[in-house]
Length: 126
Image (cartoon, rainbow, N blue to C red; front, top):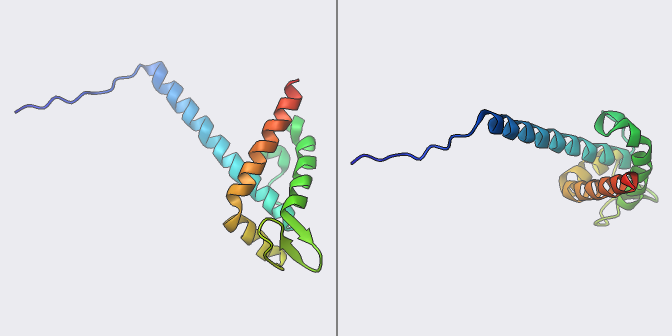
């Protein structure tokens, strides 16, 4: 009994188009993860590993910096030590706060970053 396999043939342009969009999505995911780390480090008062201008377009970096400052206030409160504003745990050291934000609230921060970027881009497009 012979089995025939249905092969999916795609054109060269379609193949490169898929590769391009796949690579673009991967770059965006990497940039988003770096932005989450940037926000968590800023909220924890740790030194930054990246420049914001390297993660977002230089034209919106200064505007996004102000947005990040607002996110930091939402994430952390500093009264006698750093406490998480999202789950009310703490007090944390700088490093402990960073690790808590990355391990427990990374998806929350990612959502916040995506929403704020979307809002910022809508304002710029108008």
